[in-house]
Image (cartoon, rainbow, N blue to C red):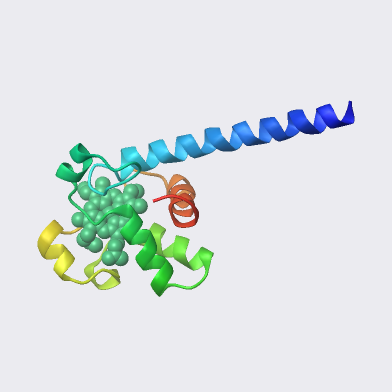
Length: 124
Ligand code: HEC
């Protein structure tokens, strides 16, 4: 019986996690995917890509900023108040893609913190 209970608990925890991750991926696709390449790459997504791919951004942040919390803070801060001088990508990126508009009105800080953590610790 005890084994069974543990098993059920593990299963529930696992499905809750999968559910939460699906939700986060959906939020990323909805809030960032219109410009950045996110999730599974497809021809259609590559064609409408109008910002550096998310995997590239996550890699840059992890290369230049040490510590998970600082990395998350950088992303949250950039998305709410993007400024060219904060960019880790070279300024030529702006020539190719233009500036990123602030997403302050589009996403809450709490959601943004959750997706930043997701993007920086697991997925792109
Ligand atoms: C309307 C298009 C658009 C949307 C929506 C968008 N971005 Fe961007 N983003 C850009 C562009 C263009 C750049 C590159 C130029 C710049 O940095 O301003 C950029 C740059 C960035 C950078 C900085 C890269 C660097 O150089 O350090 C981060 C971080 C980022 N985006 C995260 C996000 C996240 C997370 C979301 C979703 C919550 C998002 N963006 C939504 C267009 C967008």
